[in-house]
Image 1 (cartoon, rainbow, N blue to C red):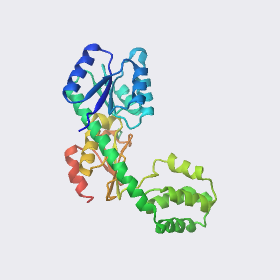
Image 2 (cartoon, rainbow, N blue to C red):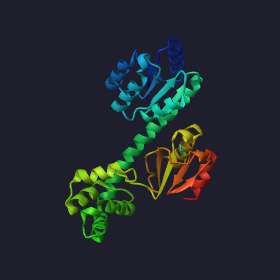
Image 3 (cartoon, rainbow, N blue to C red):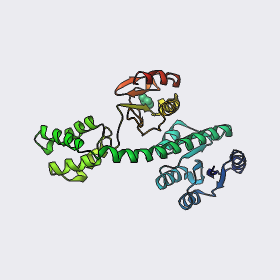
Image 4 (spheres, rainbow, N blue to C red):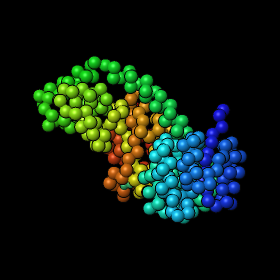
Length: 293
Ligand code: FES
């Protein structure tokens, strides 16, 4: 089996040596970066499997480096370590694309656990993308779907003022907005394709990927995150066999992580096709899921 590489940027020598020893003993190839700019160029030159980043870099550069690494390699799991973790910093770090935010005072075993979760999620995402690619070719090579779109446009006599409403109806029928459907809509209504794409990507309710019959949205806002939202999300991922952002192969379930849905008093919260579930634990996930089988 290929050795997995972890690129580490840690400013404190003692902690750095401890990480190097423990990660090496766990079978990872450990590479060390000397500074933020060195980390960014190392990622570009030879992408590691994961990054461990000390957020307390000199000059307060940690957040900037995190964003630069995430922009350069959006799929790369970045685990951020903080000397004095705060909720505000956790929110900012997650917003800038970190996979997880942990305390340097946690045992190194916590880091090893988070690392294996990150690598497992990356593996699942790669596998799902591959299957989704095959799936897309199969699903929209289908004239019947374009006939559905045309029927929807005809309901309001191909009026371009109804554009958003048409797109909502198409999504409801097909459960997503295939690229071919967007092109067809633009052509039939005589509106520009960028305008149609702009609407499809601006509104969160539109999806450009196939969605399942049931859409599960797990809240990862601050209150839910602090009260175990991450564990709930992991339970769904385990039960469904897909990472957040993907759909099961039978198109039954789509799993999404979302920002605060506005009922923090019930945290942790998830929603299935508009129905709210509050004060949840991961043990309740399989039982609730079974109702939707
Ligand atoms: S953070 Fe989840 S409902 Fe507000």
